[in-house]
Length: 225
Ligand code: PGA
Image (cartoon, rainbow, N blue to C red; front, side, top):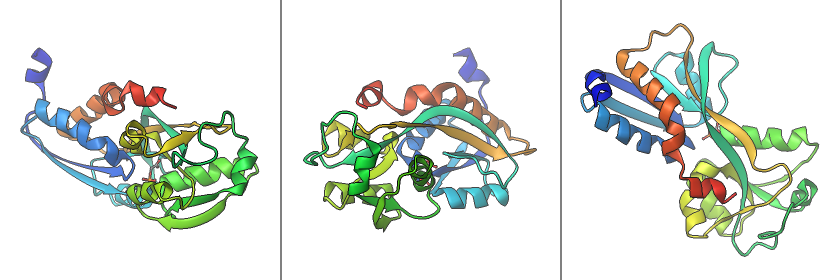
């Protein structure tokens, strides 16, 4: 109680997040807002490429994203796991198979996020580092579209576990047990190096670093992969 009384009570805060972070950012903001009702919050949801531009032009207080940029000077602090998983429709022949060799995926088609997506970048790096090429099928600019496409049988895909909480629960999608997956990545809180964080931004930073991991993804989802 004492902590919350001491809390920052005013100000405004502009947060930008990767489209994949959209699946848990509102949950974080709701709790933060309850504790700091006087702070005006604004959320921008976009892909990795535009986040890097926002950091570069200093037009945002804090960014939550997958891979911090190298070409812009930033502070980046990891705050939570971001496992990437292979998804398939429940009736896919590989569903339920154990330890599927990576090479077996070369026979499949993959639904891809757009160029500029952090998920896509990570997925391409994962396969190329292991000497594998995958067949690209349709390309889509939204995680929601990718999930619908996979459900409709257009191919497999690789997505962050954070995007499929509901689909796993309702068994509309399954994750495949593929060699090397889940690809263990991290989410980062990022801001321009040298930027003086406002009290509101400082409070949000502390909140994310200390509590996001507990709030963002229920344990039952993590245990499912
Ligand atoms: P994306 O970013 O929404 O641009 O794919 C997510 C990530 O960087 O992991």
